[in-house]
Image (cartoon, rainbow, N blue to C red; front, top):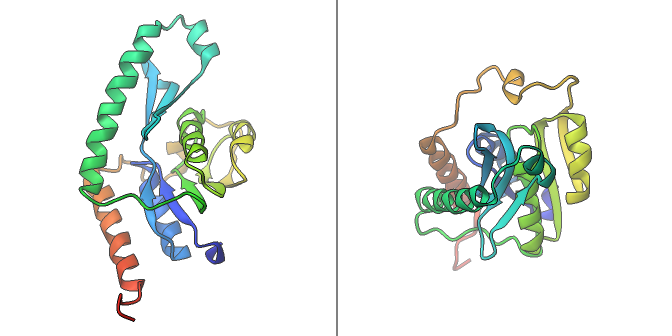
Length: 205
């Protein structure tokens, strides 16, 4: 994919170490797609949906699950506002004043460390489509096959190394699945940016 000059967009925080390696292998810029999961009120780890930042923030949620669990509509609106505030905090923390890498008309590789239900990734992919990317690729190390099948309609290509069955948790497929810290994300983004700067020709060349 080097010839397509792709942009690698990682889902923070866990997707950043994976995205960093892909970007390095492809000599591609590394950036982030900021997305936050919205969990069920009494079971936060169970994804009800997700929100992605941007001029038109994308809220994607499971209508069927919300109805089955009788999740109040005002909870979704409260969580939307709360998670957008967290996204804004992270954008300032991770990027400072640095402008995002332009994605319109380009090949974009969206990367995460793994997928379970796919709600968070689906929100990110739909937001990228609205941003006008030319080609959208999803790359993950591990995910259940049924989730991969559901996501195929959202992208032009999927690269997934393992689709174990039964699938219980992403962490089972890592020797070290400690949470990636904000400091690690910032350090990897800085290393990637320094690499890009070193590879760029001088402005007066």
